[in-house]
Amino acid sequence: MQIHRTGSATWAGGLRDGKGAISTASGALAAYPYGFASRFEGKPGTNPEELIGAAHAGCFTMALSLALNQAGLTATKLDTQARVTLEQVSGAWAITAVHLTLKASVPGTDQKGFEAIAAGAKANCPVSKLLKAEITLDAQLV
View 1 (cartoon, rainbow, N blue to C red):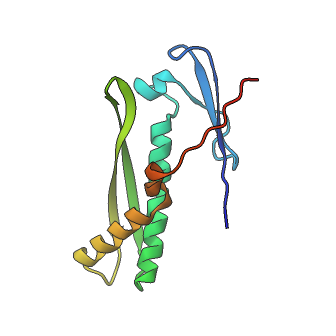
View 2 (cartoon, one colour):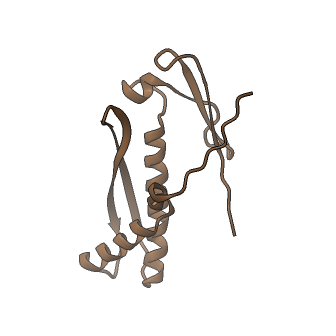
């Protein structure tokens, strides 16, 4: 079984003076603005890194819920934050790390058992696996 989800971006102008918009097929984002200033200068708008962070936090948290259920546990609350690091490496920008911070309330387990379940969820989350994914490109001038 395959599931396909789509996101899209438009851009007009140069890197610093251009403006873009990001959309999702679900409508969760509809032509939401992004640009150089929102990515590198902290100005209003979104950026690819925070979107990756939100996706990773959401995916990991769902994967953890599944792993807990498989262990006979149910979380009262799972709260995950993903900090995505964007930095220059050899003169080019790269996402070099994602740090997940999890605060959880899970009755019936101890710290050691919980850490083992969480580590498995991190390793098996589809977004965690993304950095190892094959990335293909179909580029066409129109």
